[in-house]
Image (cartoon, rainbow, N blue to C red):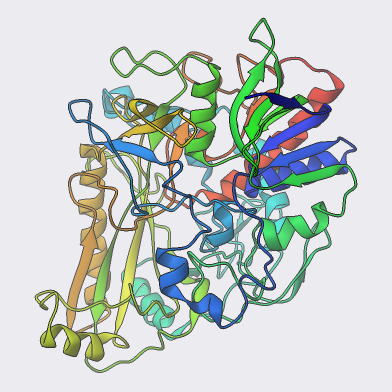
Length: 586
């Protein structure tokens, strides 16, 4: 097949999600010529996701073409090296996106910052408990950045995505109504918090009786009409449900489609190319300078796009796989612990306790947009982990997610899984239950990693990415403790019965859990344990930046999207410095 070589541009960006859209906007606004390549389709938000068709749970939550096309490209999975990895053939534990706007087009709007502790986790754990407290096979490591460095970029992202909430810590001063355990903020959220629901009020009363401090969790679904940093107007969320796994019909949920692309596509020095599947990053004869990328376009043609700067801003799996396919960086070897590409893959722990009532009813038909009431007393390192024997934590909340009548049918334990008694229980408890959710951290380990599968290939004949991952004793001990605390909260709610779901002792990829896959091309200060430096610049190829969840050395409890957006803002500023002096930034 002949290759068409195009005119060179200043920057080529792979992926049009949170990272790709923000970095394209920042760099194009600085005067650079930018081409953004997206493997998925370009939808029209006004016609493809119109009401009431967008409220089709079966279509969008289970069978949607806004998710990755697994017939063309998927991953293979196994728990450990003794098993044979097999391809993931249908969406299960996670749902990577495949459309202009990326995975964030269908996220739930959970817009939490990480804690200062999370960025210096190894140093802080070692200082408080000693090095021996860290499990011997754990790849726990610091990020290479401090809170004071990155806090302004959290603020910038929140101004772009219109995050709503109440500050709990303004420049070190604790504020009533907010999260008293958050890192110091330089200013208030750009939008007010969500209004507390009936479930939230009951939860707040119960946790307060146990000595915890409830607050409204931050959301990226607009709590009022809002014009963002890029002068894009977004409307207040109607709380109509069908939020996570769906594209917002009202444009009230912040994502690249609603917050960035309306301004970005007006810039004359920016070009968006959908249906372009990038195969590799090209380098010169030294292997130390990227010359652009090669991709397959919508007609099946192989195209080379030269560029002075290459940015991989795709999903965690795609960023890692492109580095491996391009031969950039040393592939990770789990037997020796050497190598960096594929290292420190991690997922997200979690569970829930369901409280069933005979004398109270709720309205499950409204919600969404992260309407939730939370506590943070179990997050970060706020309590003494020494006697408990685990590292990590969780935030705990109850959320009103809105009607999901297919997957949202919770029934008390002991109910048959089908038949007349099951139907009666669904009818009885559909409006008479609330959920206490555990959103927990997950560390990285030597035996959990990503590499190229030796057997299975994608539609273009390239090796699939292989995931080797399982839960570890540290996380299982943590979840046992957290589940016990949530049962205490459930009892304080005075329901008639308690139930719950947890992930079990072994990880599996069936049944949705979260789309919070991280690691594989992590950031840090040591080239022997990180693929990119603190500015997300490749240690090996100075004009290549790899930005996204792939940079996380481990997974803290809070959702990753806000931090991914922060890193995009942080890296964009670093690239502006790099353009003025194109050398390694550290």
